[in-house]
Length: 460
Image (cartoon, rainbow, N blue to C red):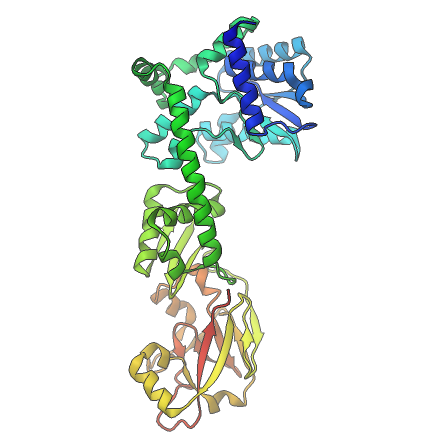
């Protein structure tokens, strides 16, 4: 074996060991397109399968997009696997029709079809091996840079993501070709790789050669930069996750003051993580920046793609998928000792003296709205619940009876928050609504003898 190929194999082995890609006994599904990259990866895994203690199988998807060329690639893959006695699974898919049915781009749809097929073959504890190289990672970083991506986008392609592994991510495309030449491996060439109407091909065919002229080791230099950025990103993510853990409220949402105390970079990561949990992908910077603004200003709401709505209410930041106007109803019997709401908050009633009432009225009108005529509600059956269809009441001093739906709409209460708003029902009447205060019928007047204050406490 010549020294060049020996170095290449050592790089691949080092990547596999460093990232723990191949647990002994696992099934490895090698995505085999027939190109030089996937042929190199599959050949290497085949030669070292017994050493790693893995069960290797290959998978190929004929996307039905390139006519005879695609059929020829499929036949090549079948012959390659037959030659090495590698089990092969082939899926023929009409990606163009599937994309049309699902309103997806062809590239996105093709990727989804491939990975869905691979997952069906590898099982729960298996691994999906894809043949991305160091050159692919550098091209991805440049593509993302051109689109204005943040540090995560500039990190390139990760060696491992879940059960997806990339054993040859540490070698360049030139090294792939050297490997194939040494072992006499045939491979197919996708003619669309030379069509520079595609952005990635523009970078591969025109930008990368110029960068290699400036720095012959460009891919390796880009890999070092990606490693540094990835380390920084992982650290910031860890800080953001810890901050979110501290800010998380039992009933959903996050304490606004905790988020506002986060350093700028950490808060951006926290918002990105929140989005990722809901849509399994990161949102772009414009949406993250818009959410950051409402957090720091302490007011407002933002609707992002995927029906994600973010809003600030009081000292709580909410983020969730809009469910329009439907939500699960809840109710809790209420005694004078209080009640615990389904979201973990406590609903309490405290008697207030006349002096304290005057102080409330002068200092905070909002607090005064939570003062209720204790005698009016004392003998009635009391229930704390969520709003229900058709609910209506007359807020104190407003003179007009309105449905809660209309009140919420006028006040721009986020849809996802409405289910959490507590309603106090006494007898058959609504006497208080969270955020809007006591009803006209139960409000405090100069003739009121006994007064109580409604208090909702957050539980963490």
